[in-house]
Length: 186
Image (cartoon, rainbow, N blue to C red):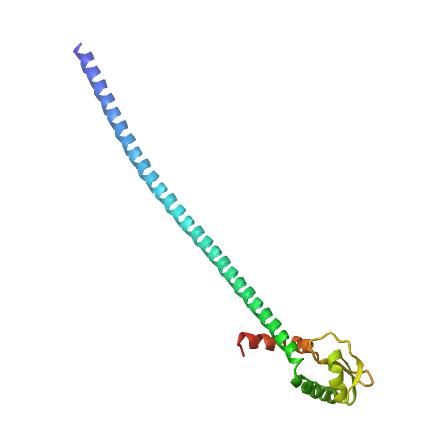
């Protein structure tokens, strides 16, 4: 029986060594998998953080750009409102000027300018209240039903040339200069 006991003992020792070896191999593989998992988890976390940072930066840039654009639009709208308001005030002042005695002298000078530019005698369309002053300046009146703040429209006596010297047209043709002057730009 001794032989069987020693054989059993030997088999038991082999089995025990085999189990110990398997357990060591399992432990080593478990540690390797743990390290690999930790490494991959770290890589995934770093990649996610980088991507989140990039997305955050893009969103910040987009929001900032939109805010700057909105601020520029608000500034532009405010500037346009200021310009329109000042142009309206300028038109009111021109209407007041058209009621002054100095305006009658200006009409005479404007008539001389139109005659010079259009080549001699001119025929004008003017406001009813300006007809007397223009007749006194030696200008022929074609019509006195012009709807304008002031000034007149002149035409050469043969009808081939015309010139619009109404205050509205003078303002329109010099709009860029007027806007620059209002904004204080040269």
